[in-house]
Image 1 (tube, rainbow, N blue to C red):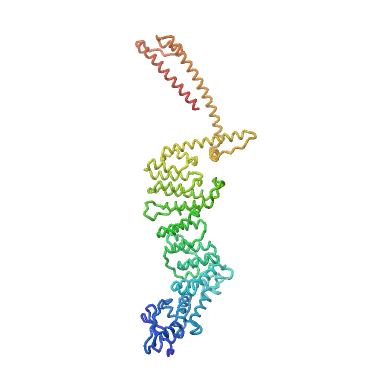
Image 2: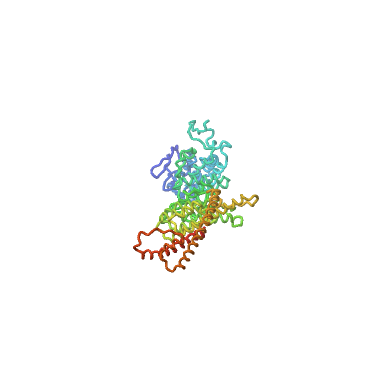
Length: 632
């Protein structure tokens, strides 16, 4: 029998719910330690599960039947809604409770078999006609399905919501006036949403492709991942998917939302005002984000990947996730910037920056580039290689990175060498950047031994230094002596090549119809820099001056040989010289008069000595003239 008298409603006393009826309760339903004191007839007439339990239990007249429902979907709140519906109390279905009520009605088997228009059919109708046609309500339904995941999956509630959201994202919002249909015709002429005729000031961002990013960021990690997969299968553009993933990651991962405050002032969708932020496990989120990211290239995307890599070190994520990120970064390393590569060391290492990570990324980049453009005669030359552009950009980037980290006093010279040698020789046209990095390292590490300095300097190809770099290196006191000599040697070779190119250019211009000669690149740079016309003219003037000097030296040598022969003749004819003045007159020399003749012995003895010194001095002068002429 139905309970006699009028039903006034339900009230709670501690952990017990009571129905305001004239008859005492004859059945007690226990849901998560909450006792519902109810009546059998209204429950059995609507709930197939409770009816079966009552039939299975032995009849006990005058005693209250107790039934405990384990793992009830939605807990006491959803059972209260079902109980009210059994008693004929009007219940309100909302996007927040529809999923739990739907699952509770299915659990209690409240089908039309136990009464037309039962709770299960009403919940199903409301879900399909209202929730699945509304963007905001679908988001709310997905959020509430977290509490009843297994039951929602059984009823395909989650998959239906995901498909509905994917279809709404794929649909052009301005095509059919959507998402205005979410609010009917409640829209002001200015585009603002009206609620009960009142302008709310909120606007629907139907003209922007990212209007849905903020709304789906309120979903849990698992549901968000499934939604992205569903959108991908529906054909949503990879750029939009990447933007949604980046927005979600920046919202919940540390270090990625530094710019979030700038965007907080942008217009938000109406759904975001009523959604509750979720609590996520950052490690699980990071692993899911790495698996979700599409194969995309771009400067901002590469910067985002490097930010994720930095977070992996902060959160100490597993090596599999880290390696996947490093490979993705290696695919587009040429798009990276120097500041994004400066990843601090979060381990026990003494160095400031994690250079091992950058070295692994460079190796991934080189391996991918070698697979993309295998060796061939056409790709051997740097100018014709299809990978010359990315390789050159990465070489400049890595040289700048080495220069930036070189001032770290704890950085070992072997690490500098390994970073520099990670790229092939063809990647660097000039070694100026590498020389600058090495010079900074030597300046920051003055205590290095000569052996370590030479080993460090071996990474530089001094033939690929520019003229300015050669000039600096030749005067660099921090470089080992052997290195300075190499720099001077190659600098002379470059100058000779440049002068040879200049002379060949002059010969080509003077010929009326001769083959055109193109100097080498290095020669052309030097000629263009210093002015080849002036250099050639000065060289010709120098040659003329050198010829005149050579002829003058020859004349002096002949005169000196004649004087020497005359002196030998005089020495043979006079075995003992009475006075050196006779010899002087013979050879045409004039001596100063002596102040006194009181010291003849001294004067006589000084004569041969003077003559001997003259003979020794003259050959040395002769030798210097010959040496200078031979050098010329």
